[in-house]
Image (spheres, rainbow, N blue to C red):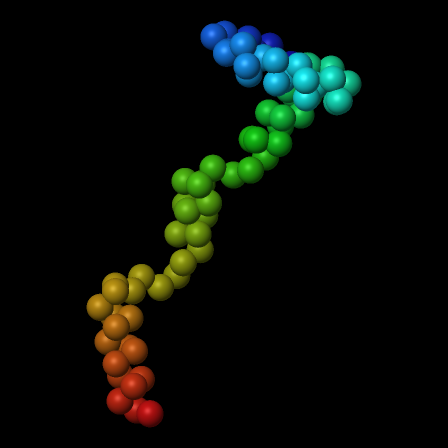
Length: 75
């Protein structure tokens, strides 16, 4: 397991971490859980890349507008 050191945290941040950790066993356990939750959420760029990989049709805005207009004419 790796070790992570954080420097230059504000006094307010450290105080808040200590306060929250007091309700959650220890600072180490609380911080470990906090970081694990953060990295469990995919980064926005990763989500967009997954969506783009699943998209099979490559339509331009004009293609969509043309199709909408065509549909209006047929109704």
